[in-house]
Length: 245
Image 1 (cartoon, one colour):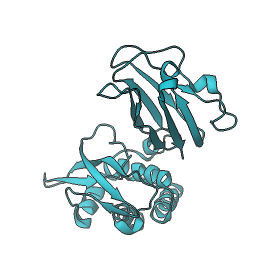
Image 2 (cartoon, rainbow, N blue to C red; image 1 turned 30 degrees about the vertical axis):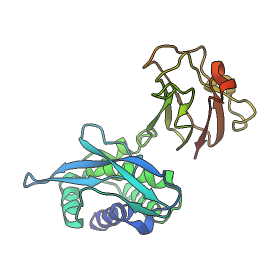
Image 3 (cartoon, one colour; image 1 turned 90 degrees about the vertical axis):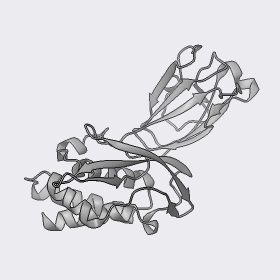
Image 4 (cartoon, one colour; image 1 turned 60 degrees about the vertical axis):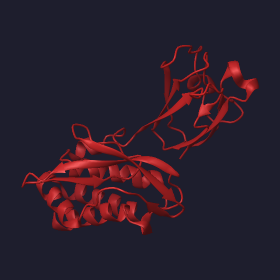
């Protein structure tokens, strides 16, 4: 258990260092800090990798992090290795099997070395869940690390655009399109600009939305590039691009 916990800590700390962050991350994202209460009652904020969800049943604080190519530049609370280690000892569930320890060691070792953002994000989510006291069976659930990205339909100023017009998500993530202004709008994918084998009808919206705040959500399980548009305003240039990694 000592070896496993040590590797877990090193992996978590490595994820917040500049040396282990690659250009694949978004240019700017909301960053979450997991709030943990130690044995002495002291609260510590544990920085999570952008895109990592707050573990169920726990509190996180949001802040903006700015990403530069190949480095992480962010402001916010610092978390020392000793405080994270203590939190792990206080919260990590006991009784892990040899197979479970081996699988988690391999997963966390990969997240330190991997160039793939989604691989590291998913492993980070698992580690954050363990730090918060969740069971291994919970953090291993297929949808545990999945997140939802919101896209506005129409801008606040009334422009006929998707905001943002380009997004990148991981397999298993969901996109939620929300009417902002200028409805009716819809989301229709270009059948000639989606991955092979994906049903254009299945992922496109059936009908239109007109009222502000109405939304349409879709989960994407196939990696690739997707082009889509708003059918009523396609001639006005209301189109966008989605990358699923």
